Length: 233
Image 1 (spheres, rainbow, N blue to C red):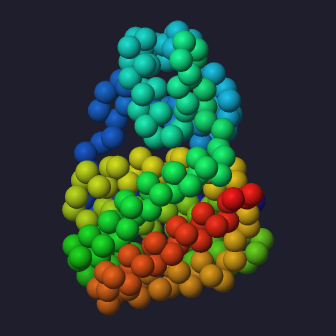
Image 2 (cartoon, rainbow, N blue to C red; image 1 turned 180 degrees about the vertical axis):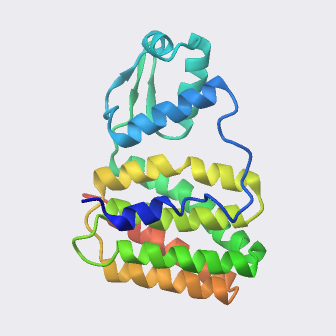
């Protein structure tokens, strides 16, 4: 039986109520990036899988130069590793890799919380609170799917990035999602649901109070908590 909480989370993904940045897919290379990132996140492409330019160009019916451009973007997104004179491969998540990914995401999410709360309308703050209630349910118990819960927390931060009215920040923040989720799925130990529910509640309270300092401190502490959950760190 499908989990209604997951369905409700999917329905929150910035589908309305917020002015959206320009579409991410603006070229053939962007379409290849989107396709391969989805395959990596879903597990269709596993860690260590080779990414032959020739094979991908044939399968996706695009030029080899388009594939090379897309692979460069995926490398910048920390999703693949370039190998000299050999095919690039899907990244194998390690604690060191995850620390670098989380550090990059943390700075963007802190900026999203700061600017998002500063620029959000009262209606947008209400929308954040409504969506936060859904995310809170994802951390209802120790048996909750923690990857889905982590995605929910990310969506709240991504919503604040959209509220910031900075389309560059919003687009860059959104681009980091796949690597972060991949790392959490691959490496993270189970986390304390009660602690994460309290973070959701505190973030909403900070947004309602327009307390940007408190919100950025919460986001910084959240990333520290996430990194601490990586196995064998």
